[in-house]
Length: 265
Length: 276
Image 1: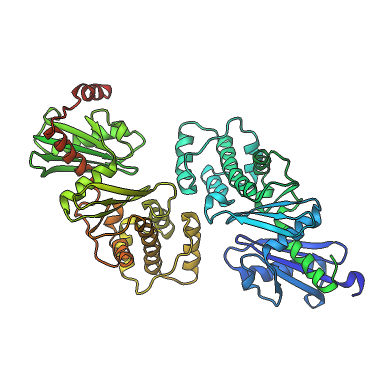
Image 2 (image 1 turned 90 degrees about the vertical axis):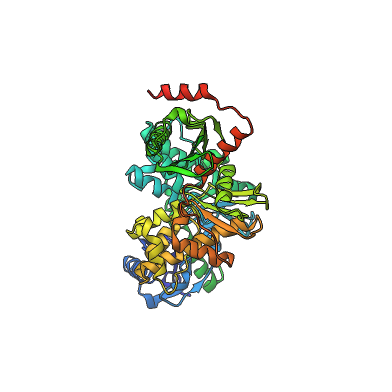
């Protein structure tokens, strides 16, 4: 392989977003995220093209592509498939070598992965496919509160007394939110209540795996400062969050593509 | 002699008045608002007006349903399990399993051959398998909850809905629509998934004939057909499936008085003055 001129791509086709990362043998060159809206194939192609043009690399020049995520089957190009758990672990480990637990809070579920001190996957657990165990819960509540998803975190952090929901179902929590608002509950307390509920679900998974430090929080959930703080509180440890938490699996996929070709990380 | 049953459900408040023979004289179904107490009285008033009675002429009032503690003029509160069973058995003496599909919960009740409650199961934790599931998705599809049954019967085949969670199923339904599935096929698929969930829950009781379906869900013919498919035989549905709880409550009041239990008059009057 001739040094810098070797390029690798990782594509993560998640339930809500398709993410791609382009690396060479030394560093990340470009990345892209687009909402899939159920059209995996077209989105994946678009994400790949936009990212390659940002990185000024031609598709034909790529030395390896790895695709991962729930939509990996519908990838519109020839690529090796690797499980998102392996990719997530590889990506987080490259950013935080001390990581032992990865919590991934995505649009469809929450997952916790435990790594050995050597970075191998020891075990993993997933929440049920229930909106209350995923970022979707926040979207549902944010929608009726009419606030933007990116404002959720900062607002929630202002809360003095988080609301405790009487239900574990996002649909029932939605109606409960409406009556709580009518009773005068504050928006930040409701959001902080949702964060607590989500954090509690993540903490259950981590406890079942056996808590180890460090803990890294990835996925869309990592973008939400209120959720990060709630998870830290629930686990009684400061969780680490990558600068781009949605990209860790795609980054891991790219790294695994490189590893496969060159035999080194 | 006259007896009243008040059933405050999560979405509807139902009142039934029966005469000394247990025959239904009048009934009213109204929405359950946030103001339970006020509403229970309003629905009661309306029902009494349908008869030639005055409130004082009611010999016993039983309240049931999840809002039963909010009926201050009732002489007694009895759980909906007991009331449903009594009401259903009065209509169908052969009933052994009752499947009640309500607005925010669903339950299964098993009766012995004498009509005594042997066991029951309930889901009120998750919107899937409750009326709420269909309500949410009807809104997504832009159709009325009440037309879902007939619509689904038009489908030759159904679209499989793989998500249990209502929120995710809502999303799945939109994807299926964009892929070209028809609304009847989707609604048929929703009924199939719904019936599967409810019947699975009830199966833990051991299903025995006859099976009676009550609650708002019983007004949906497509859902009833799907339930029949799952249990493997025809089920029975009362002509007024929303009223069985209130009917049972009224009949239990009659039973109580016959056994010499005296109604708590004092409480009733206090309750009424409380609302002027």
